[in-house]
Image (cartoon, rainbow, N blue to C red):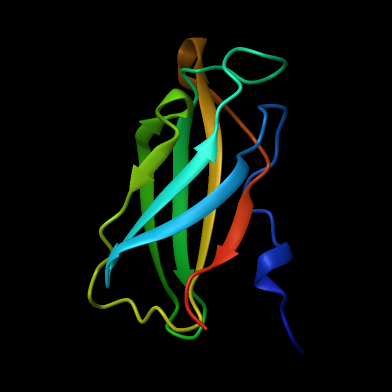
Length: 116
């Protein structure tokens, strides 16, 4: 059996997803993610927060980065743990919004492969 990790959604919802995602490496373990923000149009809000999960299925290791960037900032830099083997690692990113009573609404996640 084979799993296509790039087609898996780890979140799904009505919030507008990440658009035009690009990755630039600042260092061996520091990816910088860049995206477009369309402000407060449609289901997009400048105050939406990022949710990122980095996952290596061979190792069974995941790292999570919650709410460290707003949609309006249009970028986020991560520092990945040295225990994570970047080969075969996937990065999932989505946005979420906190509603009254701490309820959260998410976007569909977007996946990119970090290592070959």
